[in-house]
Length: 293
Image 1 (cartoon, rainbow, N blue to C red):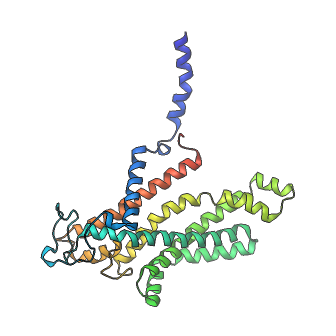
Image 2 (cartoon, rainbow, N blue to C red):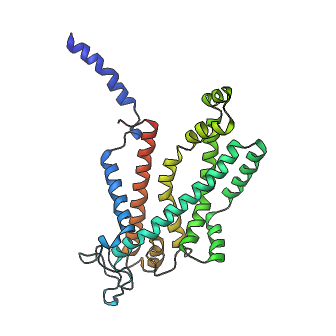
Image 3 (tube, rainbow, N blue to C red):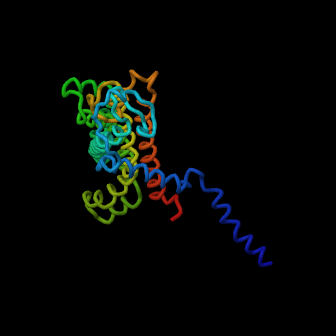
């Protein structure tokens, strides 16, 4: 009888575990690996000399276009420079572009989304029309315009990517603000006589902007991918910079007989982007209460 009771008590737990979506159970080894990858590139950005003793601009024509080996784990480029060293030193500019562009995008999104969500209907309509026009304006054309005016540089990439990703974030902020604005606890706060400013500060903004923590984490990787694409088209940092997108641009002429010039910087971009996306997904599940504590 006792074994029957224990089995019956175990059924709800089994059903609950089976009903939980697989996407909400993030493997811990994947999270640990993602944290290690991000930590590696953060160290590379802050103190690259800890990870390599070579110079990213040291030219050795005798070692030009060497395939990956023990002495050069990622090979060498057309000037004999060590690709691994250049990937390590390029992390600083690449992460700077990702963080800077995400900061600009989120700042513009906060301004426009909050203005549309909390403002009168006329303001909401004007902001929505502006966002629709911004969506129709490709990031590439914006980058071409900025490069023509200011020249190719890290700051140009940051502004171009940041402005380009802002409309999507702004719509997300607007939707969150409108959803929280119409919730029951906000209406109750108004009924209790709280001022509009106090309700906005204490209830609307904290709850509406919480998802931006996750968006900001994932946006860093997305911004690096955008910036690398622009640099690959020649709209980014000029050579001999070791920024990852610039390395892709410099190596595309040799891709048929020196594949590592494209693959190695590309792997760095993919690894960092997937790592920060995984961490962002984990943060999202923790905020939603979808992971076991």
